[in-house]
Length: 389
Image (tube, rainbow, N blue to C red):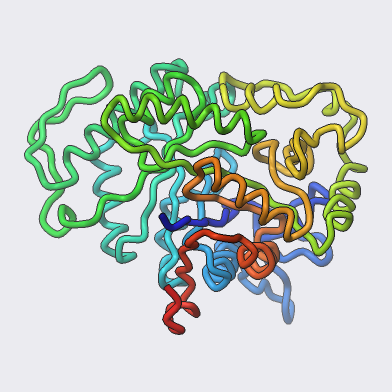
């Protein structure tokens, strides 16, 4: 089975490195010296925007062999639907994994938007369906639905979206949605349905994923915990007569030697607020975040105390926004850990690195070729012209 490997495209300002948590890329970032932001040339602004920077990352990762890019969605980011439509013309085979919360769109409108994007991009849209982590970020959207009901709403949303996709007429009456005689019109109804990457670690999330997910998507965790979670999802999904596939979102810090990689962490560690070393602060009802926080003993005083297993480090959230766990090591070590993840059942990866642009080249050129014994799917346009499968 081919392994799909995606890269993350930041939909907000990026950092220059993990050494300092200061945004310096695109017009979400302040214009500090050396930053890649709108500049002044000949007394006038050069018009460089964050969308231009995202296009650079998309082209770099496509050329480096990644099958596509994840476009995250948060209150502080650009909208990933609009970004995907804009970036499609910058790439040729690259897929766009659009993160979205179903509660903030009507499913019929989501179907129409998706089918139109499929027409424009030649079928390069992929869904990252997220149901929200609760707390202030959820209220930012005006969403007061509680944790388990958010997944029930997501499940209904996908029922309706799939129901109208082939043209209808489709009727549905549930707790959250009601449609009568709905269906996509004409050419929109003949588009391929996007693959669904479904996130969530709670029992409610796993129930919904069992019905709808093409890929069950998890943050990286220590491998034994991840394998146990996959077994739980597999049991539930197979009971519904479906075959599960699994994907993991992984931050990667790989250098020529392990010592060089840990030295990058050490340099960033110097700027971490000591108050954050007492332990992570929960801001919502995310089960995934609670699980992630439980794998290391808090408080910590040294960055190596967050190494839950060889090369598996749980402190990335201290050096940039996002999940805690990622891989730190030499190119060969990181490739070996990815191989181990494939061995426990991972079918796809969403990799990330800071800064996204330079690390896309580094990981694509130095890590991916070291993955052994697996049929990696290379969609880069360069490989396509060479006839690479």
